[in-house]
Image 1 (tube, rainbow, N blue to C red):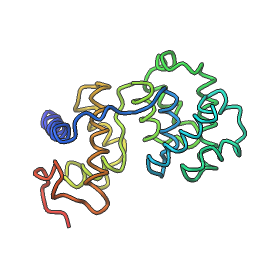
Image 2 (tube, rainbow, N blue to C red; image 1 turned 135 degrees about the vertical axis):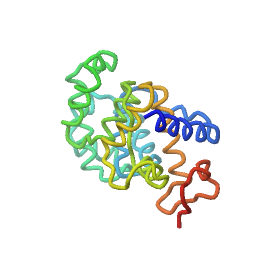
Image 3 (tube, one colour; image 1 turned 180 degrees about the vertical axis):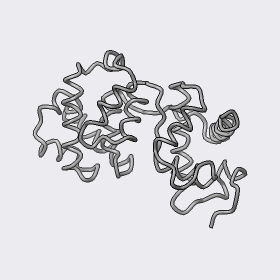
Image 4 (tube, one colour; image 1 turned 120 degrees about the vertical axis):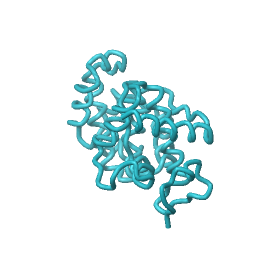
Length: 219
């Protein structure tokens, strides 16, 4: 575990040195982060920004209003995020849950990380990545978010096998590093940055800040 901790922190420092602090998640409210985490499923962030902007323009980025809206109307407002009918149902279901819990992040987080994660995972369309993103960035609880970029970086660098599970990767970070919200936030954001710019489906290793750590040349 000590070796894994050292390795992970070494990766973190290399990324931070290259990219600087990412200061995620850019938003005006915790609920905006929550909505964004749902809308970004299977699309890029630019499309989500358009959907969020539309909701704001019409004064709809409000959990109580979304909980009361019909799915069709909500879907039209978030159309730019793709698969909007599905996402409208998911966002409405989440908003309904959030309002039923008082719509107060500070009080809701008192539920505790594990129980709150279970509640989120029980909601329609909220998978582990989305739940952990909401917990980390909106509720500011120390849980690590695993996404396709994390999987690519760690498997390509042979830190984990390709058949590693979500929970195994999550435990690797959480069991090796201090359970610190700021660290988890910044580390995940940096992994996303290197994933978008370098660790693509077809990797661009030549200019990657992690190139020296690759155990082998990638085709």
